[in-house]
Amino acid sequence: MHLAIALVASSTSYASSHREAPAISKDPAADLTDFYAFVDPGNPNKAIFIMNVNPLEDPGGGPNFHQFDDQVRYEVKCDNEGDGIEDVVYRYEFTTTYQYPDTFLYNVGDVGNPANVNSSQTFSVKRLVDGVVSWTNTGLSVAPNNAGVLSNPGTEYKPNNSGVGGSLTTGNIHTAGNSRFFAGPRQEGFYVDLERTFDLLNLGSGGNLNTLLGKNVHSIAMSVPLTDLTKDGLAPTANGQNNVIACWSTTSRRASRSYLADGTQGTGGPWVQISRLGNPLVNEGVIPVGQKDRFNASQPSADGQFLSYVTSPLLIVYMNALLGVPNPGSYDDPAVPNSVVPQPARDDLVLVYLTGHPAVGNLPGGFALGGPIPGEPGKTFGAFEALRLNLANPVSSFPNGRAVGDDVVDTTLSALAGLLIPGNGTVVPDGVSSTGLHYLTNFPFLGDPWAADSHPVGYHP
Image 1 (cartoon, rainbow, N blue to C red):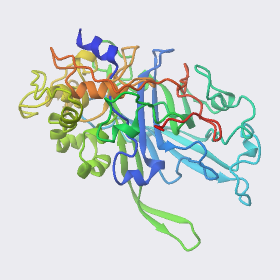
Image 2 (cartoon, rainbow, N blue to C red):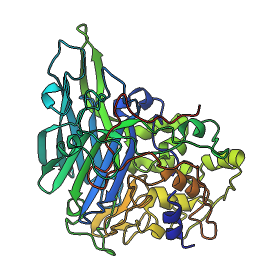
Image 3 (tube, rainbow, N blue to C red):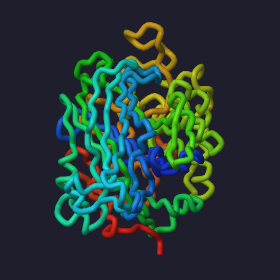
């Protein structure tokens, strides 16, 4: 089977980044769980980005339901050159207002009426190009939580509908120029048997379940023109220099926080990055625990410090010992020069995670690792971790970007087992499907949030 066909057919990654590092696991509002980037299937001139936070969000977690944090800066970053430094940034910041501070309730009536929502949020979005703000939009409403069937008695949210969202979803989609934005609770669209995965990789015993079924997340979604992302501002061409971008999401907090006598908090100092997510499961399944917090705080251009964890992954050693999956050992690819990546190494994983892979079409044109970037004097192509997306390909599927229904667990496990090594073709499924989840066919694509008192559950009895 051809390599690209094999990847699409098996559509295989491992778990996403839920509580993946010691420090960020204590800060759920800033903990990035999933990052999606794909060409809009309904409009090939637009790209969709979705970043999620608040892992394992219980829909019934009131009275203080999960929200975005006013003290966190949420960002989507895109590098359209290949040097590991962001060129285009979309920055989101939130403001919370309590309309009824004398009550303890999240809402005082149907959440479909904004006047009934006590703890309401708005957000601003800025677009920056090379660090300079090109435009700003403020005062955009955040969709409210689905506090239960009494709080959502009509069709404001439709969590059990595939394809079509409710009026609370469509009513909180904001248009600015040729872009659209949404922020609010969504159905957790990632699927994995989280309970068994971290029970010594207990994935081969059968009866595996999606233990995230019935959980929500908080999503920031945007739909933007491809020409807002390319290096030259022109539409991407299949063999051009502007068709591949590398993208990732980050969250940041101020360097210091103070706790005041009146119960409030103060912040100060510069912004410090505390979470980072490009490809799914890299920090969770590739980076060792002693380096996870460092990875979350690092910049892609400095990813050389983590190179050995990709070229000699520990997870495949565990997969071999616990699941009997053959360890392919090293693989040297002529596209990866020995001077940049010492041999022997897993060059197939370097191409998947750090450069883009020719088999899936997301290797930049004119690519030469460590060599000059065409038209960019003094800049060189680098090996760095990011989710790469070919904007000229109207069909996005991980690892060429990531769409909301992609089975990234299977893909990652299979890639670690050597699926992209010529002649290997090993596919490692985890036995979990998206059954029971509801995706939308249009923006913002993830399903409406489950209700606090009416949602499925996924767990082993």
